[in-house]
Amino acid sequence: MKFAGVGLVILAAIFWGISGGIADILMTRGWDPIVISLYRGAVGFICFFAWFLFRISQNWTFSTRLYMWSLLAGVGVAGNFTFYFLSIQASSIAVAATLMYTAPVFVLLISFLLRIERSTWFKWGCIAGVLIGITLLTGAYNTQSVSVSFLGVTAGLAAGLSYALFIFGFKNASSIGKPQTTLTIAFFSLCLILFLFADKDEAVSVVTSSDIGWFLLLGIVGAGISFIFYVIGIRRTAPTTASMVAMVEPVTASIFGVLIIGDHLTTIQLIGMMVILVTITVLSVKQSD
Image (cartoon, rainbow, N blue to C red):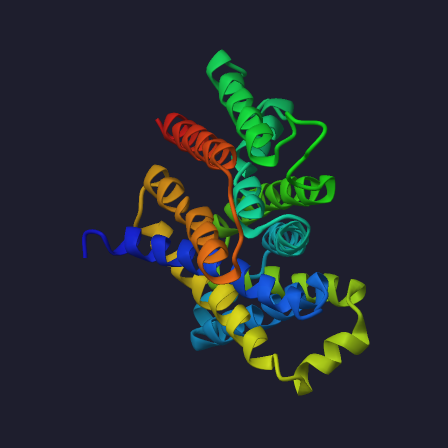
């Protein structure tokens, strides 16, 4: 039981990495990223709502602040899912997953602006390290042959920013209510937001399509089970350990992309990916200390 928390966080990260591969398969079959995100969130909401109803008397909390922070978390998750899939579509799973893990940098920058944290040379050095890694990963150093599109990079970074927004929302909401309540409200707002932007006809056609199994698998693996594992695991795991083992996601996504989908990464891209992951891991450890 000593490593139960770490194991759950690792499982969640692995499932998130696999969900990127499933989404890539669906996009190659012509499905819109927003519709894919909507179904991932909707299936996740059903899982969280069932979890919430299991002990509704204990989970229900009347708090305006809880609702506001949970809604903000929902906006963050909606942006994270959608921009992540857009980045996969425009680049590759490995690039999208790695860029999404620039979220700690955005958290750091927001903390500077809000004066929550003090600016130091170490922190700015970490930001510089991540930027160098992104440059190597995306091939931006070679203006004549950029290996990743501008849309892919922009969407990947937007996914990271959205993930940071989810972190702030969930962190504040979970201090007020229970994870079941927070996740239920957050994913309900996610579904409402994405439904407004999704192609309604395409969304309805999913139900009768031959790909419905992939959509259900994506929602269960990429939202329902994974987020439940994560919120349970992180309560039994030190923040530093959780942030480090969550780096399994881009590794899983990369392996899935190379083995299943046929993506190819150059040596320079692999070096850039490692620079980003090592820098963010060091930053997470130092921040926890």
